[in-house]
Length: 111
Length: 111
DNA sequence: TTCTTATGTGAACATCTCTTCAGATGTCGC
DNA sequence: GCGACATCTGAAGAGATGTTCACATAAGAA
Image 1 (cartoon, rainbow over the protein chains, first blue to last red):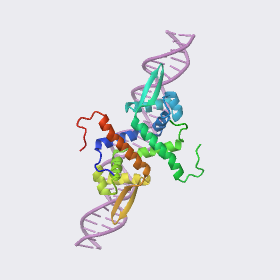
Image 2: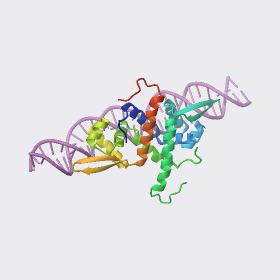
Image 3: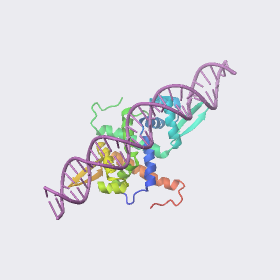
Image 4: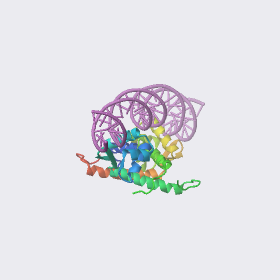
């Protein structure tokens, strides 16, 4: 339990972060990046989206310092750069996997 | 590090949850509910939004089983009903408070 | 019953968001 | 120089989202 509420500015910042995580495409990108650095084309394939859409998504993530780029020649390697987001992803994914056991999933295995 | 990526359906579900958390109003409502059960009018005051907007927001949260209602006469008491979301909120808020120390906030206390 | 309170709902509206398409930029190999 | 490649960008359109306003429902008080 929480004695004092956090300031609205903090909550707004938080909503912003959750907003970044709330798009399926961006989320797939970030999850893919949990495994380490990837190039744009690789990210696009992993997240199953066009390279243009991927680039647009990465632009947003870059603007919010959620990912960082390392450039090598004409390639751009992206990596997660925000511990906050990485933690949120880890916690959330761990819980999602748990939920599979809790919920009633007929044939409840995976792929 | 993660050997296999989670199935897309799981990631989509997760994006959905993050979507609920991504609206400042809804997020303020949920944060307020961390302290325990509250009525609609109290929630509206706590989140600084109209009672109609609050009701609409609660409707969405109800539909996603994030909150549960207990009715007593003409009052409706709302409470967080999703352990997943509660955990995400706790983790995120703890980290936000930490960030206040890390970042460069002049007069960085709280109201 | 009638009035008041507490909450829920629907439609309209403005706004934001994501995707695609077309093209721009910059790098490498010849 | 030229062409191929990898990534980035802007404009435009479709779709989703949140808010407000007006009203509906339901419970308690008189």
